[in-house]
Figure (cartoon, rainbow, N blue to C red):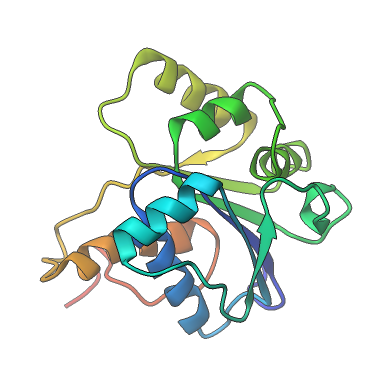
Length: 191
């Protein structure tokens, strides 16, 4: 998949882990070939969690553009749009469950439904522990429908020295899964 002129959707839900979305947006902008546009959707709870966890209100910086989760007046609510990837980070289990069951009751769920029906890339980053059987069944359903489930499970083999470095182990994995060229630590490839 070409990395130039890509448009992606980033949905941020009310799950804990706003730092993952914040670092993801920062890293996407720093790529050699960043996306042309990052359409950002925040749930109402995500805005509250963002403020509580980061100490600041969310602000969409170019190339990010914020869309209301309550409105379907967004290009990526239709399969005719040119958005090729959607990342839900962090994803609450409520959002994941609504998507798995086809309930397009907000823009996040509708955009995810579009990605699945159009066979485009949908990456869901759940931030929950432990999982119950309903969570696992919903993740199974989404995996069978073509989504990629990438739990926010940091890795330690790069010997991260800070919380930011630890968070970036997840962010780098998401960026790889989204198909962007990314210079990051690779197991047994870095000297």
